Length: 161
Length: 304
Image 1 (cartoon, rainbow over the protein chains, first blue to last red):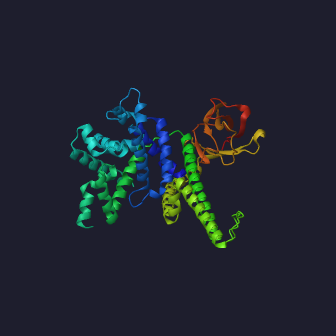
Image 2: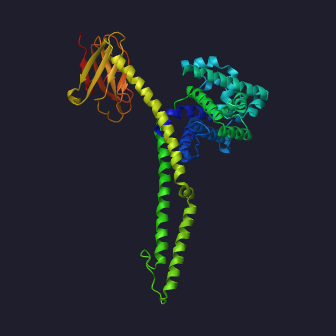
Image 3: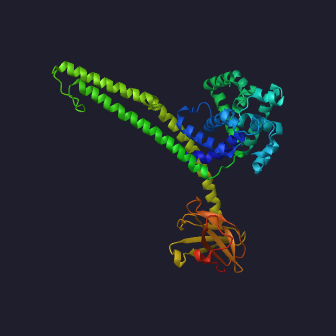
C-alpha cells in the first residue's frame, strides 16, 4: 500500500483537491479512498481498466458525493455551489500552472478548450450533457473536443516513450 | 481486425468512455465490446494509460504527514477485516464439534444438567436441540456482523485473485521505483568516478567517535555528494547539517537525516574552494550558522 501511495497519492490528491477545493477535506477524502481501495480490492477487475483508473473512480465518486452532500453545502458560508463546482473558476488556482517542462510542452500540445474539457470530464466527473448545458457548447462539439484532446495526448505521450 | 472492431475504435466512443463522459447504458455497451473484443479492451487500456500520464503531470504532493496517517488508516481496516475473518473461523469450529459430539452422547464441552429422566434418546435429542440452538444463535451473531457472511462464503479463490491483482499493481509501481533508483545510482556512480572528484573523509569528533561520513567534491563542477551510510540516526527534533569552510567562513550545504533520506549518497549544495567540510547537529531544518560544539564529523580538503 505504501508503494501505491507513493506512486498515485499525489495524483489522486490533486484530482480530489480540484473537486472539493479544500485541503483539509481533500486529505480526508484521500484517506477514505485508500481505505476503500483496500476494503474493496476484490472488486477491481483488471479486464475493465487499469488499476489507477479504478482508484481514480473511487476518489472522484467520493469527492463528487461529498460536494453534493447537504453538510458540505451548509458549510459553504456565503459561497454558492457553482463557485465550488468551479463553473468560472480561475484556472491558475490549481494544477494548471505549468511548473515543469513537461507540463509546458503539454500546454502547447493541447488547445485551451481541449484542456478544459479533459479537466471537467476526467478530473471533475462532469458528463458531456452537463458540459454542453453549462458552457453552451453543442453536444457534438463536446464530443469532438474530447476526441481531439485524447488524440493529442496520445500523440504527445507516444512520442516520448 | 474486423470491420466492427475498427468502427468501434474509430468512432470516438472509447475516448469518451475513458474521459468518463458516457451514460450508464453506453458504458455497458463499451464494456460488452471490451469483454468480447480483446482489441477494444487493449485500446481502452492504452487510452487510460495516456490520461493517467496526463493526470500525473498535474500531481500535487500533499503534506508529508498524510502518508503515515493514511497508511495507518488502511492498516486499521486490514486488522478489522482479519479480526472478523478470525472470529468467523473460531465460531464455526465449536458449532460443528458440539453438534457432532452431542449426537454421539459424548459432548465433553457441555456439562449436562442432572435430570430425573435417564432416557438416552431424549437426552440425545435435548442435547442435539441445544446444539442447534447454539448454532442458530451463532449464526445470528454472524448475521449481525456485516461482511462476515461474505468472507465465509467467498474467502477462497476470489479474494486471493483480488489480492494478487493488488499485489501485481504494487509490484508494477515497485518496478518503476526500482528503475528510478537504478538510474539515480548510475548517475551517482558516474559523478563519483569523475576524475575531478576529490574524496574528503570526515572522521567522527571525540563526542561522536562512531560517526563517519565522506564528501565527494568535484573540482570542475563544484558539485558536492555526501556518503552518509555510516552516520547514526539523529536524536528526535534534530537534523544533520553539512558545512563547507570557505576562506575561514562556514557555508551551508544543506541538511540531511539518515532516518528520513532514502538516498544514502546525497547530492548537497555546490561550493567553490572549500578548505574543510564538517557536519553539525542542528534543530530540524538546520540553522543559519553552525553550532560548533555540536560538530560530529569533520575533514580537511587536501591540496592535490
